[in-house]
Amino acid sequence: MCGISGYYSFHKSISSNNIIEMNYALKHRGPDDEGFWLCNKNDGASFSGNDSTDKIKEQFPVIIDEEIKIALGFRRLSIIELSEKGHQPMLSENEQIIITFNGEIYNFRKIRKDLEALGYSFRGTSDTEVILKAYQEWGNAVFSKLDGMFAICIVDLTQQKIILSRDRVGMKPLFYHQSDAGLVWASEIKAILKNEWVTPEINWNGVYTNFLFQTTLAPYTCFQNIFSLEPASFMTVDLNGHTITKEKFWNLPEESKERISEEDAEKKIDELLAESISEQLYADVPVAIMMSGGIDSTLITAKATPFSENVNTYTISYPFSEEEVEKASLAARYFGVKHQIKEVNDDEALENLKENIQHFEEPYSSFEVLINAAKFAQDHEFKVVLSGNGADELFAGYSHTLKLKRWLLMRNFNFLKPLIFTKDPFSLRVKNYFSQDNMFDFFRQSQISMMPLQVKDVLKPEIYKQITTDLSLYHTSENKSYRGYFEYDMKYSLSSHHVFRDDLSAMKYGVEFRYPYLSNKLIDYVAALPENIRFNGAKNKPLLRKAAEKYLPAEILNMPKRGFSFPVHHFLKNEKKVRDFITVHLESLKKRDFFNSQTIDEWWKHQEHEYDWVKIWQLVTFELWYQKYFEK
Image (cartoon, rainbow, N blue to C red):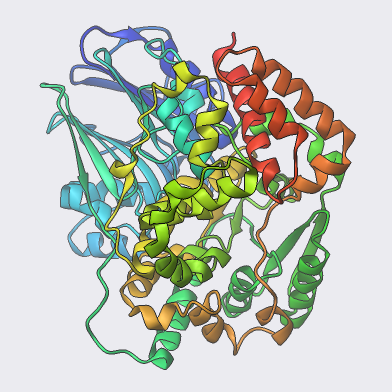
């Protein structure tokens, strides 16, 4: 839901045209309404915009160009409380606390009851108003009470501070630019780049992690001085001293010492997932479930039927996805729910390809099918879509986790790496394997991206020497068991990659994706379970499969794990339009003087290994990213 933007000038006031342009860059995130709040010292006022509703324009004057120190912008996608009572920025009764909020809080009705018991009254039914009054009651402790997805900005004029906060696993993005002039923040980087203080500049350290992990590892981005606020944290800006502090409000719980049976764990997961689904089905607009045909999304559908008489599901069909489509259709018949299939053919996948890639604000290693899924939802007036994303990270669903025990044994032979002198592709892969000294390295290898030696080969030496290749600052506990891998999966595969991509894909078309597997209670419970219950090294998602047995047909339970992604390798080999598209952009990239042209040519001409296309596509998307954000 929605998009937020804002800035705070440490010294002189700047034109409010900055916030107007920033907010306009987020129009796709909130087509239903917009609002502004401007402030000099303690004198603040609300304004409407060109895209505000008629009632909001009657209530507030249209924003004009004036010199301002603090500015908040908001674009609204109406999901809960569709009236103007949900308009933002929202102010407290004394107009000293102002909030902009992007997301959904699933337990807001319970929090509201607690606040009403304390004497608070409410003028509307929005979760935004609940957060605002909860902050008045509990201060920064409110963030740990919120179960949902959120990026929040609170201006507290009484305590003279601005607070930015982001949900536990980063389901909603929040970026900021920090300089001597001030602080700028927004839901997407493209809005930050509209501020007069911000000049785009490449952060090669961000590009380096992007090439290694298929995503840029937070808190950094591919832009210099633009950062991603890390999940489960809040940042406080002192309006007087201009100091900025950051705090965590939640960490993954430690493994419980209590003895628990697998049967009890299955029962508890069943209960918690049901509770999460019932809460996330709540909306004042139509809701759908996106079914891929696998266990995760199909189980959501199965457990949604008792809570809704009108369950709508749909499946995205693309080349080579016939089995998934068949299983999704089977499940829809089995549960008796409405089901639609959206076929994405080759031409449709290529339509707007350049625009879609550039929407992601960094290089990317795939075609994003979820953009098609979001467009289908918009076309059929589904503003909310439930997704099975998060189950793979939470329940050990990825196939590379099954290699973990073998790697823990093989790492004892890493001393062989200096003895490999040949540089053929196979030798490089073997050398790369024996370079995995710690859990972070094993996680990096599992992402199927460029290898560190490949990044060194493809970059010009003068660029490569700018990069800090020591990535120890990204390490977590480095636990030498599944627990260690789980921490990286949750922090980087989920937070920096999947839900970030989901949000950009969905909000491009004004659609909200929700994730029943990522409720506070479910994450806390599963993370604390003993390893032997949730990971066995032999089968992916063993615990979730057991919990799903009483709901799903055997054909779905026994389906092999497949990612929800477009077959890019097939396109590269068989689609001339794609090969021409790649050739044109690689030739353009070679003129940038960033990359080694000889290495690019060699990679493009020798597509031998199954995943050799990945590094080519990463270079192509780098070129598209550079064109979009650095060329005027």
